Image (cartoon, rainbow, N blue to C red):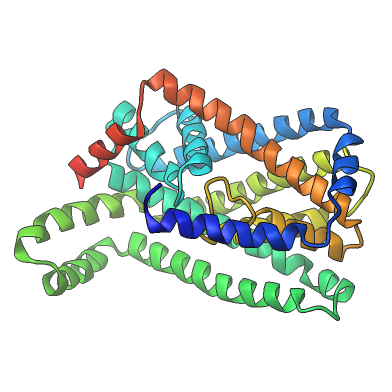
Length: 335
């Protein structure tokens, strides 16, 4: 907590929360929260855990060329990763689940991290697809505001980044020998001789983690699974919406899901405080939802997304007897 990155994230979160709640009467927000029908959270949480199970299946699928690990074995590791992302800064849960996987299955951390990065790239592509599918309608609703221009700019730059990364990974997976030669030449230029052998070892294990992308069929399967995962997560948005007296289309919630998750890539306090809430409230307001209702819904949705998986991940982590400091030592030992 003494690192400047942490405090920068806190500052960014405070700025986003200021814009999220600016002009909102706390009495109106309290009334919206008081009158919500919280029973609708139960099916929403159920659908969300189905999406988490889908993520465990996708990770199992990506890791098959390295080692076949059943989905039911992967599910606790994914839950631990979610918990880590929610309470540690800089999405540290991704590293944490790779460490737990190595402890159980002996899979090198660098190889599992490669599959996790691939997951995130596919997630980014799907989120941007959600945004692009719905931009024309949102532009029509708020054509006189600068909000759309910001989203369009974010979507365009994000598309270039995620699609570019996906192409690089697929080329690296399909032409591993050429990639190894390029990496070796790069390491000879930038690394001292004492570190080259270790660096090439990490690079080899990382390329092993990309092996699932060598087959177009497997890459397509990962993409389809990613779409299903994000549609299930949007299903949670839809169920939680029924706890409040407003209605927007499922496509509008797809757009909200894409935008808020893109916004959470911005550094912030742990738990994506502010970076999740501000764009969600702004988007619903653009659809004509009263700001107090939009704020109440978004805050409740955020809590419902955060608490259940964090508690479950903390339970699995406690069952493993893991501590963050000891886990990081294991990572340092491999690297």
